[in-house]
Length: 624
Image 1 (tube, one colour):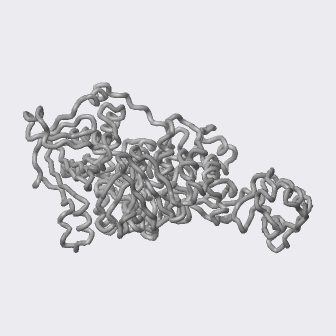
Image 2 (cartoon, rainbow, N blue to C red):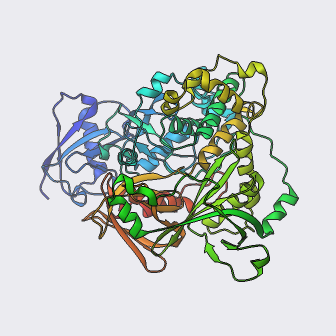
Image 3 (tube, rainbow, N blue to C red):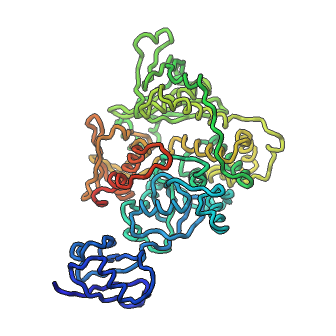
């Protein structure tokens, strides 16, 4: 067989050194090529981390038993003999930047798992983004030493790094908040999601060079195994990501919710100076409350209903501003009618009166797959539930007004479970009700001490988003924040952080990632929202939800890689297809597949991630 020269750049020889000429044959395996390179450099060192990188093909040659012919390497190939692990700078959710060595040859999924084991074992799915604000999650089982992962207890320097990762950062200056990028529209939110790295390909394949800065974020909003005793870093970073999402208005919240977020930030900042995250004491279960999940809810509601069809939504999108009267108006008592409601299984039925509830209902509505949105103001005693119920011709909007907190908590919990296909008998119903009650309790005004109400040391503009910085002066915000603070002042650091995350997860837009798409057969751009359990079709012009599809009704999905189009089939012979306009379709494909992968996971602590299944669900033919 003919002998020919192979050109190989060796990183250790310096950037100005000429390429080595190695005499090879086509049947020489990759391991043999590496041996020839090492012998020719005559440098005594450990070469075990080095591998061959094929510049023209943008791929690694990582199988030492494969021959050059099998790899497709010929005389015109330019190879580089370089370390697989290279220095990388990571921007964490709390704003800190850490420098470490990361694997540039493995798929990003596997590389981030290695990084997260070093950064105290985050749990979830590994994801990286280019330098623009993003999200993510990761993990494994942690060995503790002196209350921290063992490798952080080896030296004072390592312990200092652990404290930097596990302690909440001080409130940022208002000027810092105002200088950072804030998406002002759903289109800008969609553009942010174009920067995620492909989990199936290596860092070097995606153009990431050594010493580059990437952002590490929670991307998939399904959180497992959150145990404060061993997940201190993960819990802290998750809180920091949630806090910045609120401060930068990446997620919408009401004014009352913003004041509560500000109060929790203020409290967490205070107790972080003296207290560490610890495992909270488990609450005792209330047997009587748990038994209530078996009951059928029967209650009187103030009820308002509005039908939104596809035709009206389209008409609105092309109408002038003065024609927006079709959209839901602000909820008031006026316009509501009183009916007798019953909730059974996953459906609500309503009647003219309690006496007629034994007859046929005026209407029965199945809530499976619906959108449930709270519309609550404790101060104004307003407890409303908005339901968007999918129908063949569009979305049916139903607004329920409850009489009090207890009624609202029971019905809101029932509606949330029904939207996920669960009944009142589900074991999570009591905890869902309790969670809603706790949230409402924190919004109630609690008379505080005069000192607390006049505390001028609080930097209020560092605790709220720019919208409220402009709307109120600091002296106006201080009493409102401190009033909310009285409701959380007794919480431990761990409880306060978990409560912040709980309220964040209860926001209507929590966990929704947006993409501008063009549906097959349509002439206008629309928005696709991807959440942990559903896909949401949104009218770009008006912002209304047009349709919702649950993952549990999905039969199959695939990507036509030639035309970059995603196609999905649902139960009932429902088929949709769309092209992505603000991101590569691979990112959307990975989002959908990643959430389905998360739904297959068990709840056991420390469960090993099935990397093969993840790539099968998210990678497509490109991963193969």
